Length: 241
Picture 1 (tube, one colour):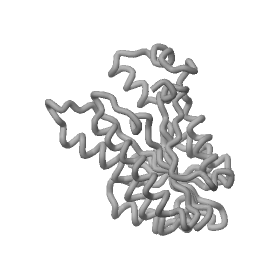
Picture 2: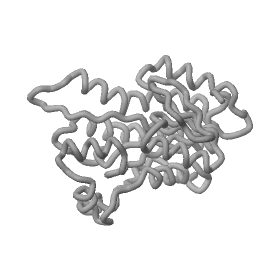
Picture 3: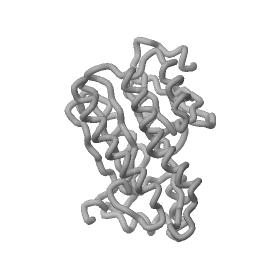
Picture 4: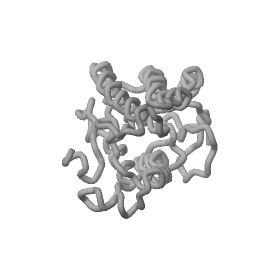
C-alpha cells in the first residue's frame, strides 16, 4: 500500500518519525484504533501491518506540502520527528543547532500548517511530541530545550487558532522513555538504565507503548474537549520539580 492507495472511507493518521522508537509505538496504537497510518521518515524500514512508509524530509516545507496534498484524506497528524545533540556555548555548533531546530520545531510548523488545510472540522487532531525538556532545562542541550519549549508554545497558539473549527492541538511531554535514543543519552551521561530508573518516583521508565496509548486517546472522541495542553508522562519526576 502507498499513500495513493489508501481507503478514502477510513481515517488516516500521519506520524512523522514513525518508523522506530516512540513513533513506531504511536503508529501501532493508532492502527489498533482503526486508522490507516503513514509513517513518514527519510529512511525506509520494515513496518507492521497497517503502517505504510512514506518518504519525507520534514525539514523541507515544499516536500511536506506535496506529501500532505497527495493524501486522499487526513484526520490525525502526529509531529514526532526529533533530534538531540549536545552543544556548548563556548564552542557552539551552529550547524547542529540549526538541524535540531529544523527537525524539532520548524518541521512541526510546516506539517501543522499544511495539515490544517486538510483536517476535518470537529474531529481533526494535531498531537505534538515535545518533552519534559520543553518545560525545564539541562545544561548541555540548549537547542533541544529551546525547540521543545517552542513546540509547546506552538501547540498553544495553534490550539486557539483551530478551536473555532473544533480541531484540537495538544503536546505530550515524555520523560525517560526506553528507546535507542534514551540509551544513547544514558551512555553520554555515564548512566545505566537502572540508575536512570531509580531517579524516577515510579521506579521505572515510561514505555513507548504508554506514549502511543496517550496519543490514541487524544486522537479519539473522548478527548474532544482537551486542547492546548502539554501533558507530562514521566513517572512523576515533574511533580517534584
